[in-house]
Image (cartoon, rainbow, N blue to C red):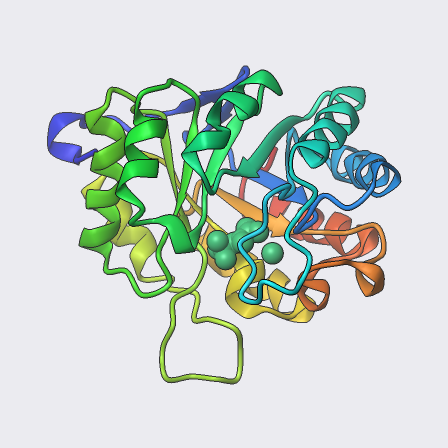
Length: 263
Ligand code: PEP
Ligand code: MN
């Protein structure tokens, strides 16, 4: 994944949509897939705001085993149906290699490896064997070099379609969910030819912080954003505090267009 092997910036092709290069790609959607109505409504507002890619988790890595764990395969089905209706590519988290065939069956466009799985080396090897694009989130306490090595596990298997995603790291600060590490953006851009995106939602943990963090990430050179947005944030089953409502999401897209060429 090093720049030494590849001087030019790589552009990852997600079903005809580029991630990396001159345009900023915004991936919007809810934290989790809840119902068909929620996904249809989310796909409608995410598409209307101009996004080509949508996020949503069917398998959720929750801190407590007693909270909603995701709708599983049923969730993938709902997501695919809603996304197809609005011609959106889908991004969803894979937690267990045993589900990989199912993900391929639903033609998941981008496989997300979550922060808690960044050093699940067997999972990384499995996604290295296929050629689907992978979003590799940074481990919440991972150094940049550990993160780059995690990406090597995927690339070593032959899959070079890797997108790095900074989602905030753990520090001594407790006033927000995580600290969005802006510094890692130029550092990664120097170290690797692969695209770097930022998730301001899991960094701040509150919806009102998201626009400022998103703009900072783009200004620092990020190739895209992963943003949580829900048709009705108050009723979200997961990460309700950090989800933008449709109007806030649309306003964010507008404000980003003032600083970069946003798709
Ligand atoms: C998510 O994107 O829904 C998620 C669980 O993020 P993270 O792995 O960064 O906590
Ligand atoms: Mn979430």
